[in-house]
Image (cartoon, rainbow, N blue to C red; front, side, top):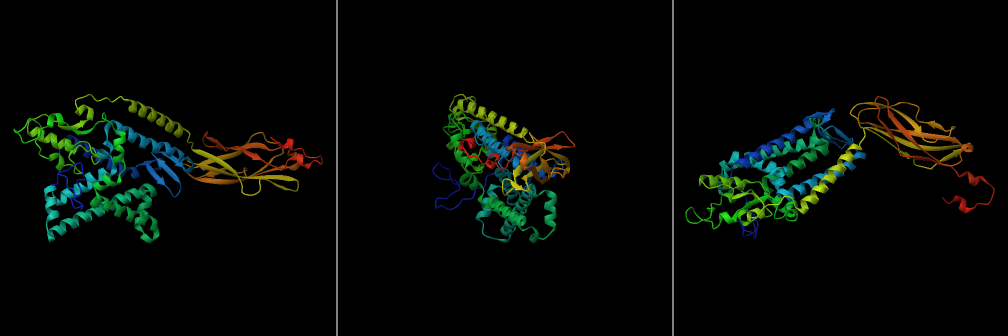
Length: 473
């Protein structure tokens, strides 16, 4: 086994070729907790499209209808600005957790780690055996036995990748629609079929070959670690004061017997005794491995443990520090902005725009303005609506387009053409108005933004000389 150093990646040989890492299996409290949390996360990923809330899946990103359902909250396209606060809040929460506990996200909840460590590598262990057996199989010449095991493993990988890809697609088309697509030929749904093929191939490539290289080479989060953490962040570290000088049992005073068990179980192939490194994903496999050895030697556990660099050096960890206070304030501010934004979402939305063309029309002594009123029902049930004009309106204003009661299906929208007519002799100046939309079955109502009824300036009809100052507002 190659000795990990700080000078090069453990997955790269001296000649530059790729060295496949086969981490040994490990048991312990952190491994058990990670396994249960991974099963919970996978269960949530699989179950969300099956759980109905208000007639729709718990999470359903209906791109085709431009409706997005999150745990009973339905967002129309016009409400996606709320997503800015949600996405940035989640990203900032990740930074906040990193400042406190290092790369806890990577080792415990990152989807890539969850699937790689708890699905694909578990399959590999079941088929090819432990780390020693897998390395022996890598070095063995091709035979019927090796072809069978490799074929079974990679065939299972393809099936699992296809299942994950189909579940991912169901978040965008729903399970019912996905099942209908699967019943027909691929030519009827080429876009969806192409997405599944692409995702299946990408997942298979990533989890069967690329593996830890994604965390080390592609993922930018590991490179942000040095900027987000400090000496008081809780990370996985090696207690040098207790462990050094390392050596065989009875030959040194240090607790570390240099068994390299922490290296054998590391999914990225590093030696945690060299200090915190970019490749460390905080999975705690080395913690369980070292504790297991210490228990066998009847020595105290915790030689490798979750701790801060300050505590490992003999100091005291300070959780309350300036950056944490700043992050907490910003996080609370962001949460407040998101909650306020979510409360601004209403189940009924109305908007209006002036129709394309001239701002007004004048014919046979009648002045006419035309608007397009759009009403959106964001409820998961049908609705009946009454549209009426509101504002300081002239008595002889004629309205066309608001006579009928508007009926909308669940999550539907409709547009009404609104024509306002006024005798030219009654028009003295432009005036403001808006449309009020009332839900007849509920107390909800919505108003469009102000519209302006326009017409020719009456002062232009006079034969008197024009004074520019009269037209300056």
